[in-house]
Figure 1 (cartoon, rainbow, N blue to C red):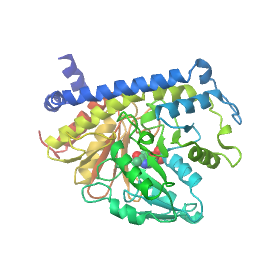
Figure 2 (tube, rainbow, N blue to C red; figure 1 turned 90 degrees about the vertical axis):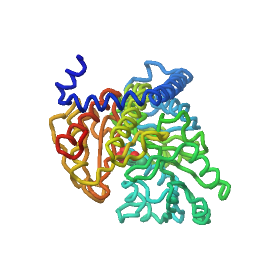
Figure 3 (spheres, protein in one colour; figure 1 turned 135 degrees about the vertical axis):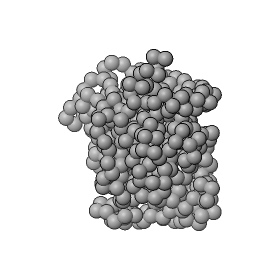
Figure 4 (cartoon, helix red, strand yellow; figure 1 turned 30 degrees about the horizontal axis):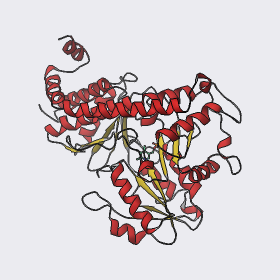
Length: 426
Ligand SMILES: *Cc1c(COP(=O)(O)O)cnc(C)c1O
């Protein structure tokens, strides 16, 4: 009763709430399974911190060059343990996921090498990194060629095509775990492992890198455990747990991580420099919270899928499939649907709930994009957020939520906006 009054004070009608509660009850079993994985991953993170003897001295700030930054070096050892990797680079100087991917690629590729993507076109911002879209400073300008194979119609890897594409020059294969701005399925760690085993049989020294954005802690296994030489991601997504104010990570084989470090700072300096500027505590604590935060986000994604599927919209993944990332896409088919959804997400935020998001030409993207986020950390997409390129099929990509209850409110607000605009009827 009190709960209904509270929802009503936040603009949720009794009919929307009732419809949502019914949906939530049907998801009990799935939520229990998510909690089980979160429990495992929470223990994995605690064990990594204990094994590396994390202590309050590691939270001290360093400045200047950052030689012998014990907190930074220990944090990297913790990440390496959690991701079962030999080595890790975890830095506030890695500005974003795109930057971390660029450092991993450009650190490990040399002129004359070829880069292969086995999942078709990679994430939008990588097009300019690679030079698929002409761009100053791209890998293409440095003499790195690029090739891609498309996924099969059922969204799986085209093994024959990949076998044909691998040639004498192929140095690195970049596998994108999450669907990003596409409506294909996300790959499981097992599927990625199968691909890596296949590719390495053809070319044992091929470097296999996984763009792990949005995938961390969704499963109990991570890509390095499935044979990846590197896995790369952003700290303002899953593994920062909402507390990391900036940063990226690259984990994997020591020689690959070392080469990336020489690209990040300078040849000869590598990982020995880079002050942590007092950010270490947030990075440790964010990693600590990440498994439960990811669980909340997953519940939100499944709840949204279930709700909008019932209302007749196409959702990827659907309400019953296994999840391999925290992203949910919902296809509304019209700009109005996409915009109403995003405005609902915005209206549920703890920060900037009073602003109205509009589509804009964002750098790195080839069509206007609308983004809804009322985040504590600017641009953080482990916090409840939604974005959509304003182009057919007019699908919205929804992710995050530091708590399940916030994710739920966001989805209820989106549904309320769609109902109020007459786009859907309960
Ligand atoms: C977010 C994302 C990126 C880029 O990360 P940014 O931090 O936004 O630069 C790359 N690949 C995938 C799959 C992503 O989801």
